[in-house]
Amino acid sequence: MARPARSSTLTPRLVVTPPHAEPTPSGWYLTSGPELPLVPLKADADCECLVVGGGWMGLHAARRYAELRPDASVILVDAGRIGDNASGRCMGFAIDLAHNPRKKDFVEDVRGNREELFVNLEGIAYLRSAVEELGVECDWDPQGKYHSAATAHGVAALLSLSRALDKLGQSYRWVEREEIRAITGSSHYVRALHHPGTILIHPAKYLKNATRALPKNVTVHENTPIVGVSYGEPHLFFTPNHLIRAEKVIICAAGYLTKFGFYDHSAIPVYTFASMTRPLTDAELAQVGERDAFGLIPADSFGTTVRKTRDNRLFFRNVYAYATDFETTMEDVAAARKHQQIAFDRRWPGLSSIGFEASWGGLLTLAQNGGMVWGELAPNVYGAAFCNGTGVARGTAFGKAVAELAVGKTSPVIEILKRRRRPNRAFPRPITALGVRLVTGWRFMRAGAEV
Image 1 (cartoon, rainbow, N blue to C red):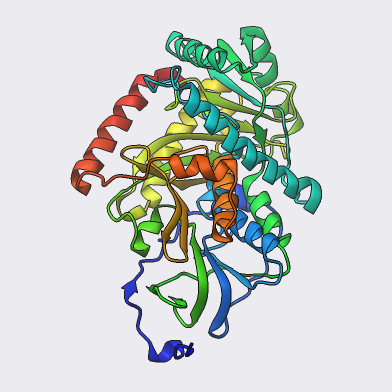
Image 2 (tube, rainbow, N blue to C red; image 1 turned 45 degrees about the vertical axis):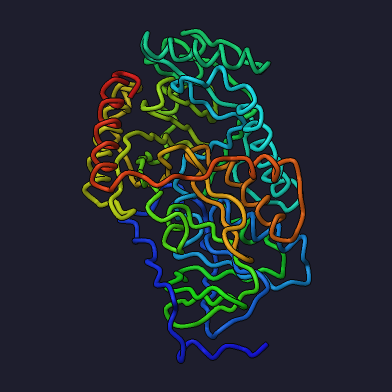
């Protein structure tokens, strides 16, 4: 087969819009240690497999493909810095069983929840193998999560969740007011449900250190957006200055996968926001309970998620906003920060005057029908995207499985994912944007003191 000409003589058949730059770095990235060494793409390159996106899906797709094909050349590109991408901006819960008690069929959907649990456990096992076998440091903490309620409305949501867990045969225990106060130091919460199985991690640390631990046949290029594509034999992927020729490609670019010619107009891009304190002093630590670290999931999903980390910081996440063109602004971050300050005031009023050291947003891609992208999209083109939440464990499993599919393997996880519904076309953007704003605004208001 004749080798295509160099990039200077070619134009892509499809122009790809690269991700917008984030207005602020995430607190996780700021506390994640030394940056990865930047390895620029200095010339056109050839590989057996190109992986686009260095988040939970892409990183683990690259790792697994390289493990299964140790003699193959694998290139992993990310448009920004790994660890400060959307994956590194989450709250660091590797969740085994997704919690969605507001869904009408959550309790009844036993098969769906069991399959979800199976897939997520596969993801957690692959994360654990990186920690235990490859030495990936990420503040790994298998303490589980506390679903915490501050109101009668929140307690009702916990009761709904407990019924689902009962039906699935899942173990959990109730945590009453005095115990949750001892754990957190906060009088805000009235009841909690502890569900084991979730792992708390530092997401940016994991992503950066797992990148360092990738097999030697993987080459990583950060700050390398894809700006054009010509699918064929080989596939041609254009960066701003060079061309990558690949026999196979795995696209793990979250909602931006729609820019690569697949599932057009199906992504509903939503941003959620977080803030982080400076490290607390010894006197301040006395106000936040007896645990070195904890993770609190709000009983109402539009409430406030809270982490206390091993480096003695508090993290708060709340507020959802529709992200026009997948972009958020400094004004959006500043507006959300005010709500996070309110959440801080409610939980630790004697401490909240210290404010925040950093605030940021992170992209979450939804589909109108809850569908997910996974599998072969075109000949030798594979994709994984649209986690619809719980992206750490789920995204890891998706990435591992799609790489196995790309080399011709099968597995129980692959068979489950083949049956998942795919994203449908969303309503026109003005309608979707208005709908998201109305629903999220109403849900946020309804959450009340759970925020």
